[in-house]
Image 1: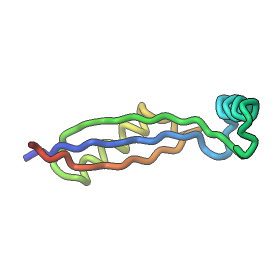
Image 2: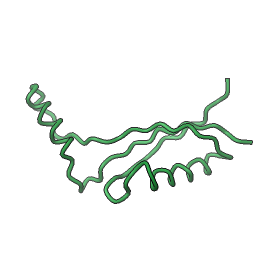
Image 3: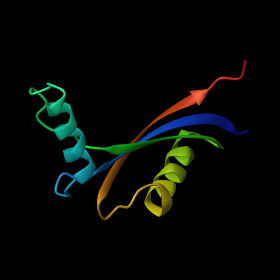
Image 4: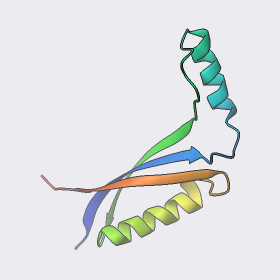
Length: 88
């Protein structure tokens, strides 16, 4: 029996990697008067719905998806939240 899951995947640049887009957004916010913004980092958000035999298998597939396509492991970190979808 397969279970259905939804994954919310967050991909962000590693802290050691420069983020020109984040710097540009921070600068724009300062020009708008938000002088209290100390740092902006830009990332990606991806939702994936999948079926798997169990939660462990779903997590293993998501790790492979992130390592192979959704994130660049050299310069990016990722994390995901996995929830089982209940059929209504």
